[in-house]
Length: 91
Image (cartoon, rainbow, N blue to C red; front, side):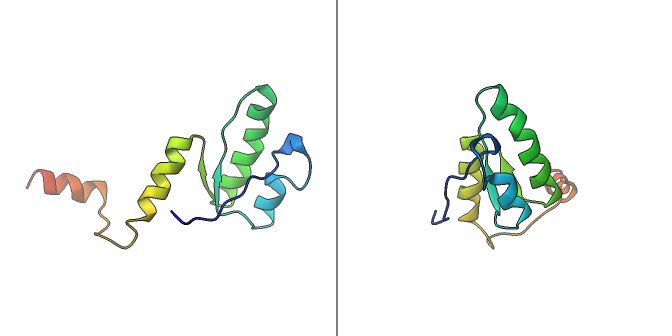
């Protein structure tokens, strides 16, 4: 999909780590899969910073793939609210 990416240290792996880069405004999308108790604990701080700075965040590879696939359709079609979609279904 042409989106540049790189692996970044998790908190337990030392600095500079993901939370540092989030706070510095260097991150626009996070894919954070967890395995093990420490990784799960670290994911809380990653999620908190991502949410505070409105950074898109996925906890699964499938979710990341879906987001990347959606980028292929940017600017196509119109954006509708759920209410508008419901109204169209019952028209």
